[in-house]
Amino acid sequence: MKAHIVTLPGDGVGPEVTAAAVAVLKAVAAHYEHDFSFDEQLIGGIAIDATGEALPAASLGACQAADAVLLGAVGGPKWSDPNAPVRPEQGLLALRAALGVYANLRPLQVHPSLANLSPLKNDRLKHVDVLFVRELTGGAYFGAKTRTADTATDECKYTVAEIERVVRRAFELARERRQHLTSVDKANVLETSRLWRSTVQRLAADYPDVTVEHQLVDSMAMLLLTRPNRYDVVVTENLFGDILTDEAAALAGSLGLLPSASLGDGKTGLYEPIHGSAPDIAGQGIANPIGAVLSVALLLRHSLGLDAEAIAVEAAVEKVLRHGPRSRDIGGNAGTEEVRDAVLAAIEEHADSAAAFFCGARACG
Image 1 (cartoon, rainbow, N blue to C red):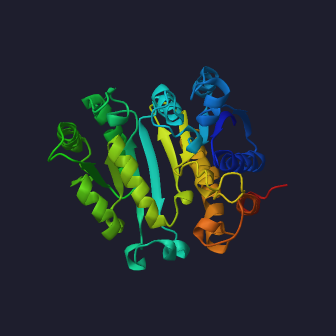
Image 2 (image 1 turned 30 degrees about the horizontal axis):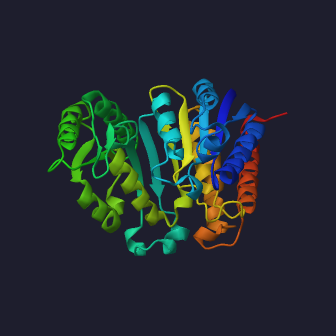
Image 3 (image 1 turned 90 degrees about the vertical axis):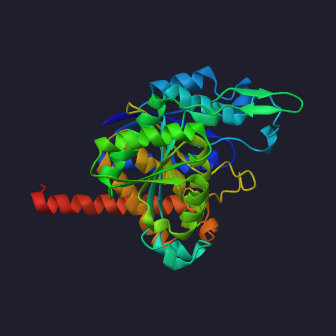
């Protein structure tokens, strides 16, 4: 198939991990006979330096015309002044809103060989397989804001329609997994959470095959660390989702391992590792590219409909995590390129094995 992918390397380690992810996409295209084209654009701090805008019009237009968008990271100390009129994060928020990607999927699995890296006891990490679905284009991050010399406000606002669309996506994903949905809110205090909970309760009637439970966000923060293997799909609002998924990353052993997919109603999605720009290690060639590579697998599956290719990437990552080499954040000493090359070799081996099996079954000439 043909697909046009826009890359937004961004700041810090973003260009390094994005380069590794693009290499994986090119390898997939070569082995599976696809035609992927790439267009690199600016976002974040580097875009501010070049154009004065965190999301230049050229970048936005390219993303809106793409089949998928692959992002590295934005931000860093150079642009961290809270009083600056333009900040890198504004570019990311604007892109999410413009693309209409309201559902942020963050899968979390604990690889057995990396369980010792987690601060939790190993017995609590067995069979952890959680899919977080975070509402991405509403809530406090997008509400009206005010600031005076001694006060500040951030409006948290949700409509029924905004809640319905992301909760339905979560229900549908739960149906494909273990049929259990946990909705997280703060309905004992916040009016937006009361609307959230009542909407989830109403929609549950349309999904009688899915078991639904409700958790308050503060107790959920504790339960994620004490009983993480009891959860299947977890859906929540924007701010709570941001905090809980970063907390949950500690279960996996490193932020550098986890991918994300931001999806709307169409096929175009925004894919990025959940880690930040890590300016302390930027330019050293030691960033873990696995989160970006697994984001490629999500891109292949959700935007391009290439499930077999996505499985090949995930199998390659699994092999590298099991046998090495590993980056420094997960107990190894390999650099970004060494990990990338190991993943590429594993993809080639997977593709060759699949081709051999196919020919054996069909008597290729």
